[in-house]
Amino acid sequence: METTLKVSKIKDGTVIDHVPAGKALRVVSILKIENNPDVSTTIAMRVQSEKLGRKDVIKIENKYLNRDDLDRISLVAPDATISIVSNYQIKEKFTVKLTKTIVGILKCPNQGCITNVKEPVNSEFSVVSEKPLILRCFYCERNMTEKEVLSQL
Amino acid sequence: MLKNKSIVSIDDVSESDISEIFSVSDRMLNALEAGKKLEMLDGKIMATLFYEPSTRTRLSFESSMHRLGGSVVSVSDVKSSSVAKGETLADTIRMAESYSDVIVIRHPLEGAARLASKFSTKPVINAGDGSGQHPTQTLLDLYTMRKYFGKIDGLRIAMVGDLRYGRTVHSLLLALSNFDVEVTLISPQILKMPEHIRERLGKNIKVKSRENLDEKMDEFDVFYVTRIQKERFTDQNEYNSVIGLYSIDVSTVGKMKKNAIIMHPLPRVDEIKPEVDYLPNAAYFKQAYYGVPVRMALLSMILGA
Image 1 (cartoon, rainbow over the protein chains, first blue to last red):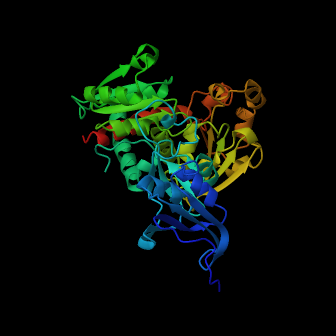
Image 2: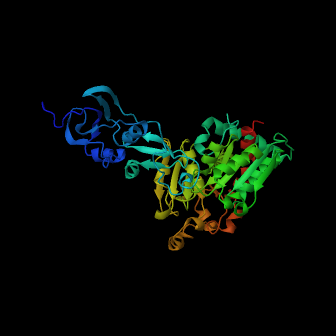
Image 3: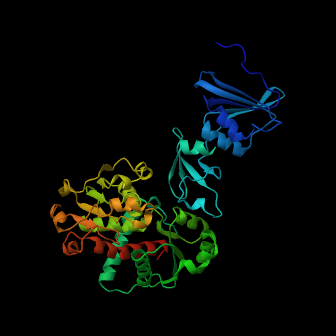
């Protein structure tokens, strides 16, 4: 049993735990925090986890996530746990949840889809399967694979 | 219940809707054959917006509406319409819905009819969107099979030709997956049924694939033949390599079961020789004819007559 912390606690910010091993950098990229001078980020990759075997953990100081961030994270890390930390204390803890429909985040990979031309609509996908991730475009009804989703995030 | 409902995808029509459509289609067919004048859609207007060329679908929709006593407004030449001036489809639909009670749309982009249904408070019927869906064609295809064989369950169906770009076969295969049928997909490798359709099939349907048409032809009840569509190819060499690959003539029909039928969404080019037209197996003109009673049934049910 590990008794020491590999990364230190943060004072204020967000901890994203139970990220699938190797996906932490993708989550950081989704949050677009790598170039933000006000935000410091600590990443632990492939650490032991009872739940996942191996997992990644991300600790972000001075940043709280909005709905859009959580929706994006759920596409990459559907079992991620979010802890909101204030003055070293966890104020709120919850699991991200893949929403039934994903609106405006992704672009339909089907070039012949009406959403890829100048029309006043957001892209919209329903979740066909969570593992593996398969989404279906509400408009052209084509399926989008996990690989296609990740290539856009 | 189809009242005020848009029909964009074959998934918008339930199994019970299909059997209701068929029984109303039977009544419409009887009325047509008896020369009975119908006025159930008197005062109703159908707008047709065809952004791609069409002969049968457009004529049969318009004929259906007139047969029911309704009237039709249409954009005859999209090139000279507001679309050519850069208007979005969404805006065109908002305009068209204020002029009509139902909108029929054909568009080169997939999902166009779904978008139209989102911007219209009036029901929208998809008359083909790119290589996507063509649900009313599917309904008349199923109706034709039922008319010839009395049922759809138990049929062995061969789909032949362009299964990649042909939207009629996409919609039809999805619809057939709700029946207890066996489908064999016969196409060259480059024109095979897309994975995105195959992965949506129900568990009941048995699907096989092959490239050769000539083997074991007497196994099938229905040959659903499609045209290899030149306009869907960007590579001319690819088109030349597959055109004329499957050609049905009198000797091909001789290898089929005696009561097998040949269907085709039309237009055909070389895939069915004109000599076949005179054989009892040729069902394609009858199939096109059934487009009218089936669309009459749909229009009357959607407009609540």
